[in-house]
Image (cartoon, rainbow, N blue to C red):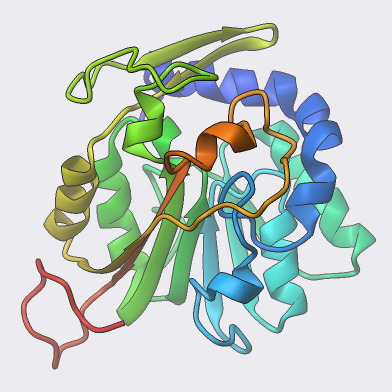
Length: 263
């Protein structure tokens, strides 16, 4: 079990306080498909999780309001979804009931998946959440543990380039190499993000034993999004707002991890 740091507690408290307003503001966009990022093409076009999830055991890490988990369950996946926010999980369970869909929701921190058995999942994914996680190395090791050999891991977060620019402009506001936490004081609490370079993310994955198979920065759809106060279309057309990582846990017959493998 991982004890809460001050950063984790602040983020949990913020999500518990802001969940109701967040879901009211973004539910339509979140319910459309697995949402990898603001103005991103939907999963049915990107196929980050593969051609079909039918019959697959899927883990969503930091599921928020449960929209992606429920969507995948309706596509025939057997889904377990975790989040550290009670308020977000309340919404997720209610949403699953409204869709008459079965998803196993658990209250848990991404840094501690000890309630889950080794090698139990075919796919693990997280959409726009892992930048809130302080110990990403531990998180990736836990994900690797619960995946079956050959299992797929995919996640998205703000592009490291986007994260260092002014909120609505292209001017650089901080060093790309500044790993100090980024603190946002909001009306419901404090949000803390952890900036990592492309190299930091890649190294954390390979150190956990993953083979990185793809790094995607899809061009945004030509429409505004419900996050336009932070991700205005005019800006994310110029530089990527979202980076999506795709990796695999090697199967026994695979070469040793650390490089780029087949998709």
